[in-house]
Image 1 (cartoon, one colour):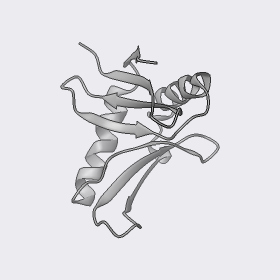
Image 2 (cartoon, rainbow, N blue to C red):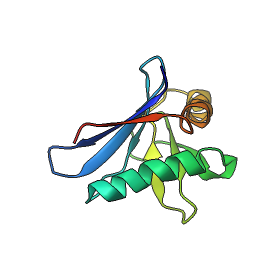
Image 3 (cartoon, rainbow, N blue to C red):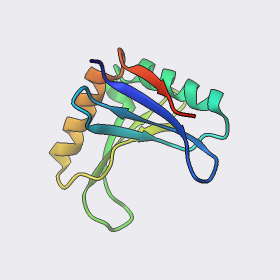
Length: 112
């Protein structure tokens, strides 16, 4: 079994994707996209940019909830996806490492 990108349409009608590890752990969730094609391009961008260590940003939650988040940025600087909150910075960095390992060969499951 491989890691999986799950592509779906949210309640607001936007297209999104999540990436799950081979064990079923959610690694990241995407930003909202207006079209399915844009979300599919987002998946390809994650696959392409996940091997670049400079594409990752780990930072403290600025909304005041506490914890840390990991984001992956495309070459144009736009955030493609982000992790859920982590209690410690090291856990957010570990999420980046897991993303690097899982993304390139992940299958795409289309739930749209």
